[in-house]
Image (cartoon, rainbow, N blue to C red; front, side):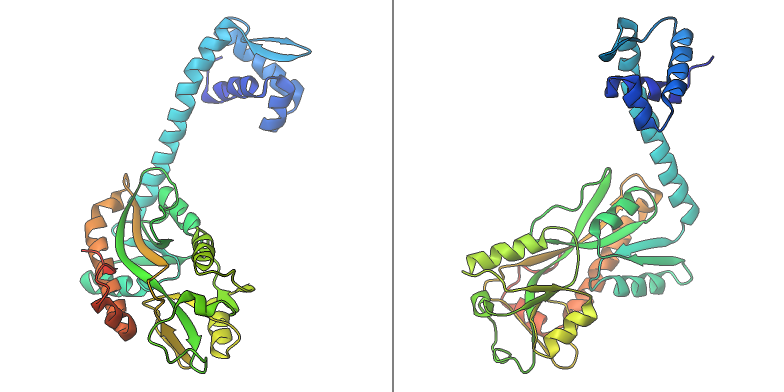
Length: 319
């Protein structure tokens, strides 16, 4: 019998579980079937790999040698499979762009700019509330680029071989109904909103913790927080039942007022990410430049934000 990768996985599973019975359960096999396979593996390798008794299974010296090699080979084979999938996925789709984004101001402008610069190029898009999900798709080669936001200086979601660049840095503003008693102010101290109900859109990351920390520094704990879709958020704000935090590039609709928070206690960083080993990575400089231009367009469309930037030049587009 020739030794195969699956045989090494069996040996490794038995060693990790400490018994054949537990390994069979983890592998989804019947215990007699796993025992028979292990015996065949041992015959092909020239001797017993485990000492087995009522207390479990312990590697023999031969077993230790085989396990040492398996712990090198198994991760290498896994990496090979993942790299092959990434290569196949990216090479089949290019030339073209598969873009993913959380809900932000850049994706529409990026698609507009890429199609104008390269007419006829295929572009597909995917949106999600989850930055982790989109990052995982890019790391697996199923998206070429992802646009997502992170709170302040918090790092992007962890994933192997991902490269990131910052597109822009926004302050977080507050959204009020136009009939709200504070709607006429130029800016607000966060503490003045201590008695408000808040409404937020869902998402992963640490923003809820950062918001709670900012409120604590302002001397209060926020009242009940509604989590719902963007449309419902805007409705509740517009009818005066809640206030909301928003990116400074938010495009106002009728009945709403957007206002800066004094001292900018919360920030939002726009990131562009891609898998550094993918074929699509070759286009990263071009896509990053177009993303920054799309972000700058969004800033210009928000007159309140553009005015605020005059005295707060550390925010906005990143060169």
